[in-house]
Image (cartoon, rainbow, N blue to C red; front, side, top):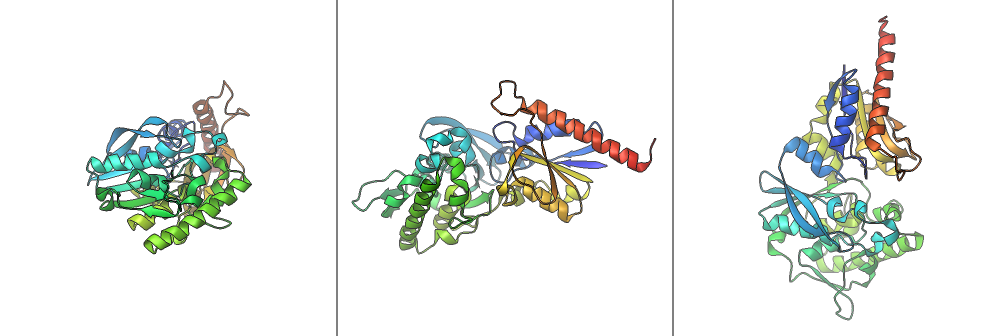
Length: 373
């Protein structure tokens, strides 16, 4: 009997490859396991894609959401393709929500990584748009590629969420000509559009430090930018599917690069031959750092649970904390400390212990059910 071990990353503690090894090592004491570290376009997608497709990591310098110099990387794949994980340069894990990165952070650093990948010969960019700290609607990425923004008085504006409402003109004269010829594919970790009650700005800006009033201002700013972009290009960032992921990055990138965003989970699962391996298994074990309402809006745990449910296969969802359920999956919290900041906190140890206990329990139930003495 085979168990499919297919976790995503436990953000802030264990990446998907390491989590997969830990869970597999415990379940393999009782069952044959299939290891499949997955991702959804957010944190850990680079590692997951490298696991299945190979490629070479390229180390580069960049900047975090507030402009601090950092060292990061992208994945160079065959056929002149580069995978850029936005979370590695513009991710929430690089900053503190108290600094309000939704308002004052920028995706400029991610744009720098893209620019360097293109300069190194990449003709196609797989941009993983998830795990962001920002809500600048991708203006930072475009700025790194040569786009400039000006207010009504002709003063140059720094791209960030708080400044969207000030943008009066978009200057494309300095746009990187190689970037203009580059093909983009955007992998999204959530399916929300940009605006409205269930839009990306309203749903995800709070976790990036924005309060209720800030969120109202951010949406007004993005709506203002929408009119400027329509006037400049004739295209509407508000109509882009998945446009609300990563603070609006897919919306802006789709307009300027004529690309269609897609579900990151579907892309990675296809690469991993997930459907085929699921059919070989009697149980799927997935997981992520936190299960919440967004888990069913494109996150890997929601995707796995849905596919398993449709296939008639039970799914376990291991998580650090949960304030929501996942249809088709049984959610189990694995971390034992009340606070992750506890000095004795050991995520890997807790994940291993919980995995072993679950595997032992399932094996015992199956043994009893089979009538084996």
